[in-house]
Image 1 (tube, protein in one colour):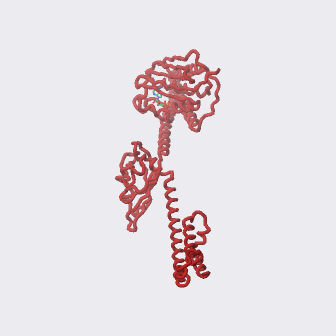
Image 2: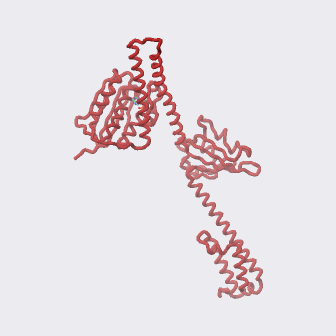
Length: 444
Ligand code: ADP
């Protein structure tokens, strides 16, 4: 009997069953199997008194070889169970990784029918996996190039590629979500081929690159704005300065004065552009540190008007603050910047002149300051974008007026840093009203 047990133990041991018995929860299935197998063997050998009759005779006396073979089979089964368990475990692990990947991942077959679709793909496209499994991926994603060309039709790597072109392909484009939104994506295709080189499956990794595309657009806008807003005044300054410096001409006093005025005004413009750029970069670096103190906004508004009315002869200015308008705790330099931007815009964007009113009201624990003009107004579709960096109305008269598209972005950042908000109401050809509100707690 000892011999048989040793045989069993040796055989099982040779397949690492001992390790399985000792190991922890990883092998819980195998561990269940081994004791039950040993129990069975013990029962056949009469160790378990409930099974000591014919079976014991048969195996004990008659079939030692059968027992050894049985032990070997059991060990193989054990090994298979272990491998199947590891395989299932590995499959679960890979599925969990794919499912929780920050990138969208889907797989398709050679006919481009969707085989799998992870949760990021669901979020990205708005489709649930139940809606897309078994459907053609090109009907779901409708990938297009930036110029609108249908890439799923003209450049799908699953259809177009062959063994020579490789197995990994990258493509950028725009997909259409279930609710009709457009998302910029980068797609990486890994194509699995048969030995004959035909595509069997493709795993497609889809990454939302909207932010990167926006940054790229911002960079291009910034460069073209710099080109225009810096180069134009520099060219004018250079032109006037070289003309005045010519030794072969005598300029009369009036020409000299007018030329110097142009140089001065273009230099002022350059300074304003650079100031805006610096302030905008300070705002986008994070919420500015506020040096708050109680400020009389009507007094601040008067100061701004006095400074800016030198820019124009065509406008009249009116201040209309409630008589009991309180002093408000704000950063005076930054709120002056907001008022100056709004009043300067009111002047710039009403080229035919008119009245510009700055009014102030106290209502519901907040103060509201409004700058109203009678200028060109803003088309409705453009309003929501105006507070973004470098955003400008590029239609009609507005595009002929110089600007860098940073003033309103700066205003919004400053007002929000104070816990307030800024809004605009405008009618094309009739004028605009910019209102910023700041929280205010009356004392006592
Ligand atoms: P900039 O004036 O330098 O272009 P802003 O950020 O101050 O930049 O303004 C963004 C855009 O909003 C302007 O280009 C203009 O089209 C529009 N805008 C701003 N204020 C007014 C206004 N009072 N009336 C009409 N359009 C305005």
